[in-house]
Image 1 (spheres, rainbow, N blue to C red):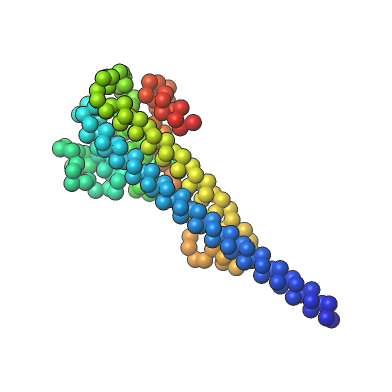
Image 2 (cartoon, helix red, strand yellow):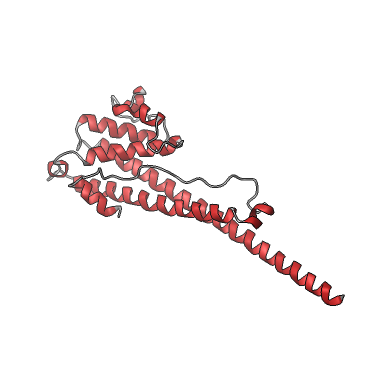
Length: 220
């Protein structure tokens, strides 16, 4: 009888320790997830800022500058900023190249958030700018051009890395939350599972070369 009680007490103690460890591990996963999302947000803001700087630099043709400025403003929060360029498509509510249509029909067929769509639009606008024939050659000798392009490339690469790290953290956390014990004891609380951040973060058009090839090397 005493031995049975001892065994039960040991089993209960072991279960308690295991549940506590599992809860702590899940909590640490959520903490890392929050940190990864914060890092992703920082890189997205930086990319929008350098894209806007490129749009207003005078290095691009007017149409591409307006497209890029509008996409950068949308990616920074949706509404056009007070310092929007004259004729900025974001200010008029009509994005060039069918921006509104793209938002209503995500390429993946899944429902994407406004932020994901806006960030994808910015990737497409940057891709269009870098894919212009002779783009780099046209900037040769222009003061500050090389430095600014390097900043844009670095910002794009940081977004690629930060999003990959965040989505990996989401996958691990979602897998942990699906464990039977976690679900049975509601160790994750009432919060919904974390969501992946899906966006077009490539700055390379298929078959692209020149600046596109540089970006492809950065994101591999």
